Amino acid sequence: MFRPVTLFLAWRYGRAQKSSAFTRFINRFALGGIALGIMALVVVMSVMNGFESELKNRILGAVPQVSLVKSHPLTDWRQARQALPAHAHVQQSLPLVQTQAVLQGRTDMVVVAARGRLASSEPSGADSGLPERLTSSLRAGDWQSLKQGNYNIVLGQGVANKLGVTLGDSVRLITAEGAVYTPFGMVPAQRQFRVSGVFSLQSEVDNGLVVTAAGDLNRLIRRPAESVQGFQLQLDDAFAAPGVAADFRQATDYQVTDWREQFGQLFDAVAMEKRMMWLMLALIIAVAAFNTLSALVMVINEKRQDIAILQTLGLSQAQVRRVFLLQGSYNGILGTLVGVSAGLAVSYYLNSILLALGINLMAISPAGLPVVIEPVHVITVAVASLILCLAASVYPALVAAKTQPSEALRYD
Image 1 (tube, rainbow, N blue to C red):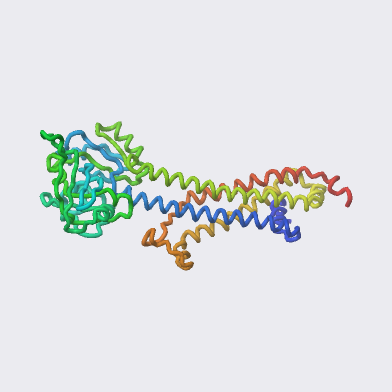
Image 2: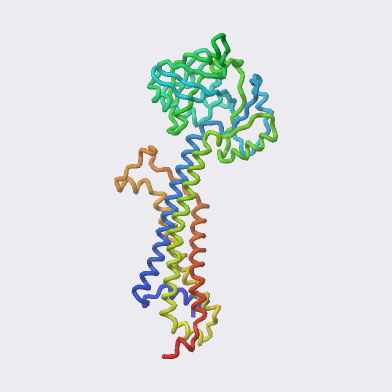
């Protein structure tokens, strides 16, 4: 006979076709519910991971992830950069020239962060002060137009749309940082700039960032033309910024901030949405898993005589418990395998499936819905499903083990 006997009996009961139609329906319903719930969770979480990754790349890839700022201008900033402590997460340290300002067009005004680009042979070189993600997003114009003394400016797409300006138009940059006091009160620093470029990151950054030559921006805020305010650190993982910022606060005398001050609420909202989706879909899996309990109780009621006969042949109570624990696990294993396989397949071909169904979601991204499959999440879902199915099998297994042969076979 097939060994071990408990596994053989569990496999036979799980595949039995002689049980009542209602019992088979409940059993198939439980298995299908597990598979469908896992598939939905894998697909939804992959899309949510994709959206989070897109936000991280489009927003955090173009802004200072960790900022180190001095209260006085750094003129010999290359030497100061070499003196920064090394850190495992820091990929690049870029010079930072930035101020908060108001940009005025012909009919409207918008609050912006004005960033300075230092002269460099390469637009995204280590000495330019601009991350590669930002420089690669230019849609019109040329970064090389930002030369000191030209007073040119490159706008985010959202800023250009709000002000209604295009290449060659003039805008006025106004900032309080370089303000002077006159007999008539404080007068903010302001200067006319010519629009020489437009970039588009397809994110919130487009609505509040402009870039000009660092020398021109320094002159506007009355700082030495070749100076910088500090450094912006680009990390291998932007979500490591809090820990990196804490380390630099302890190791240096810079004023240290990170991206959470500006965009923390947005990513907190995304994280909360992910947790709620996990909870809702996990409850679907839990309901389907505990349908296994109903199916096992019905099987036990139908098989009471078989269980009694097996006990008279020497099957112990512990072996009876294992039989029905394994039978409950059978649904969990089969449902999990089907659900994970279907979820991975749908996630991988999601955009092709949507296109075939005529569902147009391409406005979100030129390449369709962003999908990132995290193996850790898939494994977590699969393990949690198996644990739930095993937990749902405990009570029926205990009931089956308490079957008394004399009672079950009294009238046979």
